[in-house]
Image 1: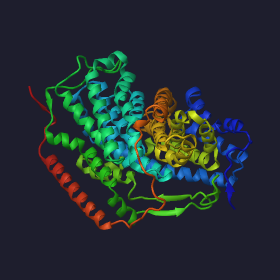
Image 2: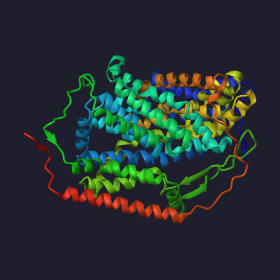
Image 3: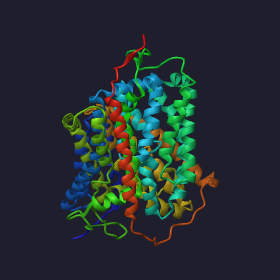
Image 4: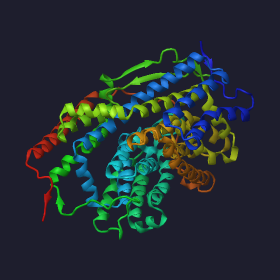
Length: 589
């Protein structure tokens, strides 16, 4: 039996929207006003969404339950799998004592919390977003900042806000690839259009972050470093997105801004070192020194992590891993059981890509890192058990949030909300980013939001005479500022920042910044649509048929062999260095 989605169950779009918005408004109320714990708010919101889907939209109980189950399973894999492995890798570094050396290294560059935030939350987080995505950047950078001594709320909050700049090009450009596939617009013009919007935000974001942390006057004290960080990132993001495509902007911009800022800090230092109120003075002792080998060993988990996530993003390697390590099946009872408004049946497939998942890459990095940092595998197993216990409530929260998102999408509730925005006529370009923001808030993923709304963005723009690439790109750009308040992202950041049970505090910390940035992007898109049309790239639509070729697995196996040799050389070098007598640390005087 097939059930057809209903978009306007009351035959009054205004009334339908009021009811459809109830579960979303509940989350805002629960986290901002009621200050509920994340898992409680998510579970109740899921129940509310299910009741509205069944009672108002007429969704069969069986399909509603299956839809929630499908979402929860996706929440567990690959999302929770990735978060678990990311936090495990960090905990291994802490347990071994190597993170103390990393803290010393960061302090030797700068003890200033403002500059540390730019290096780790903004630049390193952007790099991780470009390679792994799906929550890993926030999980790793928030844990690192907390480990460095940051206030947990600020560490998690600024990592969520900093993650705004790179989300559009995350996971080797997957959000733009999906938008292209759904809308029919080639990847490059979408990448170019996004790359002519977000760099404006990227230039301002470092100053914005520092202002949040330390206030406007303290941000002004380090304006040279802020400019170096923001301009280098924005220029490289613009250049790579406009001339190289959507795959590498985050990797290039993230690494480039790290190099530029670190080089600049060799010749410039702030007059005063800023730290949080009531925080002890910087503990950096210039009389202490570590060898280069000790620094490399301490950073080895993150060096291996970087190599692994880059390798896992290379398509030939993905093809090999998926060929021998992926199980795909139709979700029982749900596949092709729902008919969309356009008359097409909705496929419900579950891909268990246990080898090519980013979480698996991080797991392998963790397993390699355990002996490199001086732990035994028994100790590593204990760390994993402690990490699993640490993340039990975030895992429940993420599973509930994804169940919530799937019910909203499958029942048609999301489409009801989208319908109102699509009927704003001449002003639609202004509201186009809101659609992307809404999609990412619900699903926690810019990729998912683009899959949901790119076709609607394309069709609506055509109907009002606006170039569709403007609104499709707006869906992506608006989505990035919804990421920081998505319940899924909040759960990940809370887990990494030791704020489990305090998700409401984190939500209240980020929500106003999300709205500020969303309005800013809305005005930019409105200007692109009607005032600065010359900024829109010239392009041709994709053909209706696209030739597909079987992947060349030989190339993938070759790359894996090179990866194995590279990791073996790195591991051997680090272990050989570790066997040498290394004083803990040398005292100069």
